[in-house]
Image 1 (cartoon, rainbow, N blue to C red):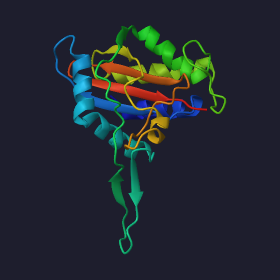
Image 2 (cartoon, rainbow, N blue to C red):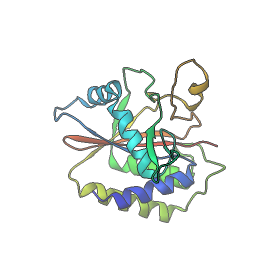
Image 3 (cartoon, rainbow, N blue to C red):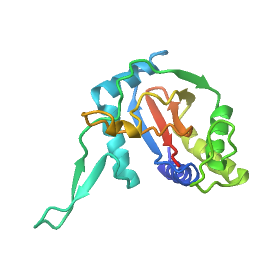
Length: 201
């Protein structure tokens, strides 16, 4: 699949939903009915978090990583922030959805129509025609990688941003709980990609 079209969609979602949007890629087994088990395993082992850190670097965020400039060195050093985003939930609610609904969900976040999500007052939404084209281009990129299915995952398995301040442990947060959290899974035969959005404000 072409990463260019994916990044264009992610950047648009950043602006319209006021989100730090991520694209996570995880290997899965080819057995039917194992998606939840596979994702939980990635969360439990930390590989989900590692993919989030990689995406943090790719997208130029500093939520889970940072660049430091040691004294006396010419180049910066990349450091992963301590902690993990998984909140320990062992059961995921995963609903298979058709591609038309997946498209509607994404368009709603892009346009702020409020069919499924709240509208961001800090975001800059786009009109339906442009949103439709962005999602069509995104789907064409996905099609290049083979046959895929869409799943909506209830966004309750990662720490909330405010959890960082609620305990004595390092809990890196992601979901904002402003009715613009999304975990949309794109499943291929041996790979699942998860589009994460966390609109705030």
